[in-house]
Length: 270
Length: 209
Image 1 (cartoon, rainbow over the protein chains, first blue to last red):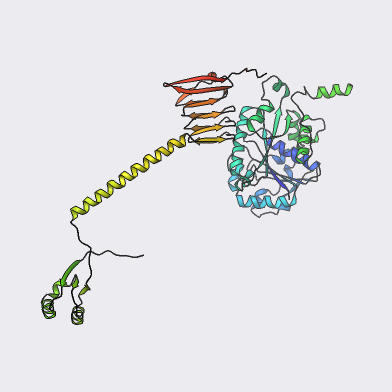
Image 2: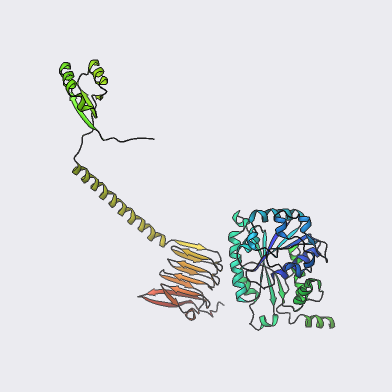
């Protein structure tokens, strides 16, 4: 039986979908069967970031309504055989979602996969509530800025009151990814420190991802940044995926690692 | 259960001599058509048969409740009403005593108040966690918070104990507290002679060594 993880943020544009693509691929690279689902009905992006937009024939709504079988709608990643993708509908909107259909879909996917990762839409409306409803765990993606932190705080509050697990008296494990950290800005005090963010949100740190210009190019080309061996963000996502697979990987203090690449180079000459 | 209530006329009479009784009814039975007849004394089978044949309704030797004049009834009703009112007043004062006691009741919470959450507490609160930006906390009693407040606080108790909270929006008895006055590690905010007084409890740069 697999585990269902919702990736949430509250605020949009913090790198939720990028995180889903990279974490999903990272988990698949560890040899685990993983499926990533785009729950942003009407505004799908995950297909593009995974480089699978031209492969989408059937989407999640087709499966839920019984117009297509799961096998027909699942798209296997080009880069890793363990990674599958189920697209969101681009023509419908989130009002078509209903709890019963989602539960059935998630239950079926849990049987087939080790990890079921749901990419939540931005905001805290019905689409978001449906994404978290049947999640076992949640990954909260934030940027080190106050608006992102507050929106995530709100999203966590809703998760803690509306998810099925909470209604059953269980807890939803919550893990934090701090995305787009600019080490220099943190050191100069212009950007929130990770410790402060953890103080505010009070959830477990899963990983810190530095700002990386390569991420945009990677998204545009449909090749998640984790595939780029030289990327700092890619390395960070690799560590996150390993942690999710149960490995004990030390937290890297990316803030103090002054401009990572420079240190790497000096390390070579030692 | 189904029940009906009737108002009817009752004619009570004592059966003396059978013949006299029968001749009286022979003459007047039509008058008693809508009455309930109550018979006292010895009632013979002949009388019963006669009354039945005239389809008159009768009962034998029963005692009906004494009727009372309307005025008396109204008096009694009024008395009952005042009794009820007194009872309610007493109950209310008991309740108010109870709420007074409740206001001194202390709630201890170790729960983060997240953005968008609105928590209202009757009585005192000891909060061992943060109030995050976008959250609202309203209490009727006294408030002690040991962690940073970034959300909104509405307090109408005797005092508050707060840490330095530069981002908080704190309203104490309808008055907004200027955050810059809350600069120490622990500050006491209280109402003294209609004035809000803020005193440091724990100084910021305290040297524990």
